[in-house]
Image 1: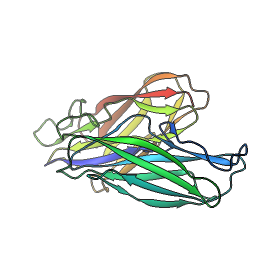
Image 2: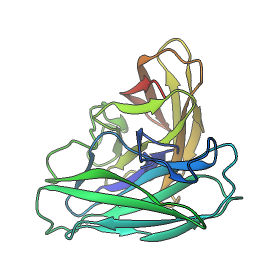
Image 3: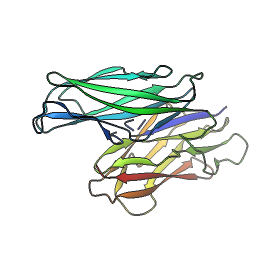
Image 4: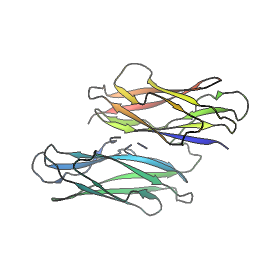
Amino acid sequence: MKKVIAITVVLMLMAAVSNGTDSAKGGSVAKGEGFKIDVPTFDVKIKQGETQSVTIKLERGESFKQDVTLAIAVDKGINIEPEKVVVKASDKPVVDLKITVPKEAALSEYKVSVTGTPTTGEPATVEFKVKVIAPEAGYTMKSDSDKGGSAAKGEGFKIAVPTFDTKIKQGETQKVAISLERGESFKQDVTLEIKLFKGKGITFEPAKIVVKASDALDVQLMVTALKDANLGEYKVSVVGTPTTGEPTSVVFNVKVVAP
């Protein structure tokens, strides 16, 4: 039975800053004294029986120093945590949401509503969609790398990465999930190295990580698009090297878009 080590690149929605749909401005109407909520522009695809993290961001005006209470509501059939969170004026503006899809959830689109209410002033609301897909659909993850490690059955591993382009705005950070799929007998540490195929414009944190055989399943990776990054598609390579045996690699795409 395969063990999956989920590595979240920082969407486990936001997809660590956001993907890009803004709410109407809340708070004061004076310039710089309001706020917006930024959520993913694309549908978040989650398989039945799985959980995924999504990152949202509170964008504050220069003069906006209030606490904001975020209330998150979702259509019946899927679950989200937390349902309510207070983002204090001194807090980081990034909030991670955990969305869980029951095994019996209907294959459909579900609406998630995020309402931000400041201490004083008007609230702001924005929505994004979650699409529930079948386990075999393979939209959120793909394991198209060759088997690494030993050639013996059950003693190798594969790397799974997002099938869809990860969209990040210039100057922002996002979580991205990758997974290490281990064979039943594969008990080695694996060193993962993440880098661009060529050029520059986006960075990774960490760019190199050792996933020990005894590690907890979840690991987070942050992908940042520089403010002056060229708009367009970037190919990202993930190479996994076991303690002994052959390495394996896989590629996914990051698309840098304008703010």
